[in-house]
Image 1 (tube, rainbow, N blue to C red):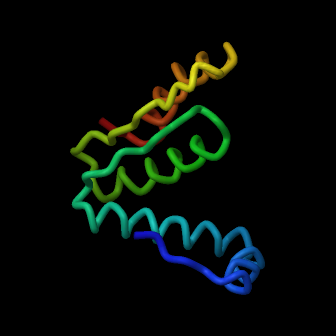
Image 2 (image 1 turned 90 degrees about the horizontal axis):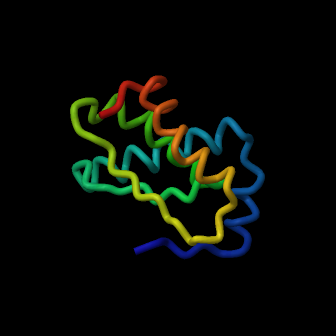
Image 3 (image 1 turned 90 degrees about the vertical axis):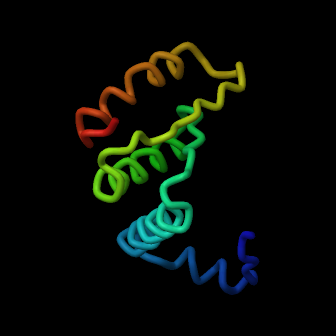
Length: 102
């Protein structure tokens, strides 16, 4: 279950440096992978936020679960423009080249 934060706690989170935000994100990804023994799926729409999340998860996955395929689900809302579909076809290859993933 997700934690609930107070308004003040959220304001404090937004004050974090980008480097600290990155560290927190990586630690949360590691925690999720370890808590689920790697039984996770990344929902990916091809947009900026989910692409960045997929990139971060991939970078951690190659270290923790190098011999297990990473489960990625493309969330096709049918509202995507043509360029998103092209990107969705090419980005996984980029990730596999960057982080030798299965």
